Structure formats: C-alpha cells, structure tokens
Image (cartoon, rainbow, N blue to C red):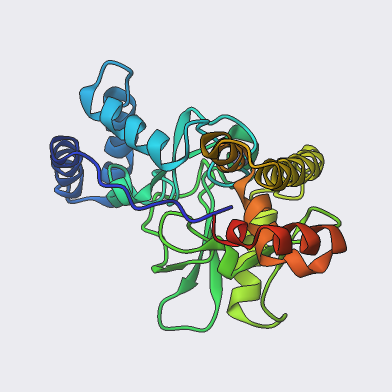
Length: 267
Ligand SMILES: [Zn+2]
C-alpha cells in the first residue's frame, strides 16, 4: 500500500460535490442526513454523471493506469470507496478527500465499520451500527485505519521480503503499531492469494532490473534501456518494488543488483 499522489479534481466536479454535500449538511437531523447521503450517492454516482466521470478519471490517474485497489494493489478496482463509511459519516459522502478505488476483497472486512481514537481520551472505539440500532452520530476522533490518500502507509507498514506479508514497522505498544495491525487485519492484507502475487511481482521486478543492467552493459540504445525502467514502474504491486529498494541490503542478489544500478534506488 502506497500513498496516492495528490492530484487535483477539476474545479467544476469539485464544485458539484461541494454543492451536493452542502445540501446534506443542511439537514438538521443526523438520521435524516444518513438516509439522504445514501439516497443521493445512489442517484448521483452513475456512469453518465459528468462529475463522477471526472472523479473516476482522476482516481484512475492517481492509482496508475492499471487502476488497482489502493489497499492491496492486486485486484482491479472499479467502485469508489469511502474511507470514512458514508453510512456513519454523511458529512463525508461527497468529500473528494474521502474517495479512493478499492476492491471487494479489501472492502469486505471494512464495510460499514470504522475505528477512531476518541478525541480527548487515550482509547479507541469501534464505530458500527447494527440494523436495529438507533441512528445516532458516532464518537468523534482520528482514524485508526491508515489512509493512503493522506499519509504514507510505508511509514507504518513493512513488507517482509521472505514471507511477503506486511508487519507493523513500529514497536509493539505504540500507536503506529496499533494502526498498522488494525489496517492489516481490517483489510485482510494477509489473505492467501496476495502473498503469492507479491512474490511473483518480486521475481518479475528482479528479472527486469537484471535485464536493465545487462542492456546497460551491452550499450543498448538509450530508449531501450529506459524502456526497462518504465516496465518496472508500470508493473503492479509497486509496494514490492519500493520495499526492494528500501531493503536492498537484505539479500545478496538484491544488493548486487542495486550496487550495479544504484540509480534504480531512486526510481
Ligand atoms: Zn484490494
């Protein structure tokens, strides 16, 4: 999981989102805002709606041409995900900063639940609402889930290049550790197919890097050499590549490759 680039949404689309959000925020009752947020989202988020055409175009640019899920980077994602669920936070239903593309496998564990560090306390609370529960505003607080729109997941997570699973980067007992652990489990980032696809991605990245080194040694034309760099940057599972850069001293093969092509450490 990588931090998404901060690309601007077109002014027109942003104005429409703000207008729809203002209409919901103007309703005096929280329960009414929840109902209206769900209804308005369904009615506006349609393929012919120009605002959502612009939203999806910008999210696609943000998440690379392959339009992979922002959380697991594995599956193609076609549905807009609300980082703060719209059923709990109607004030963020049309909030551009609350959108990203995610896949069903990641969203399945999250759905309509959210965990926050309750403002003014040292503890967290799970925000959930069962079907029959009264519709009341949730406790206020900062997100426990790592939000790749606004923070760098690799400040919290480390991908082990042997097990190809994520672990918290910080020491146990810290808030950073807690946030990493919650994110890994809520999004099921440990689910079986992901381990294999990350390992395959790592093999592919190493092959491509070694191809680049050979092309350079053989004095191939510059555009052919550069194509090999571009192939690396266009392949899925970019987190694997970033971790290979960050942990290149962890294996002799990686060390030898990056010593032969130190410029690849900054790609
Ligand atoms: Zn996913």
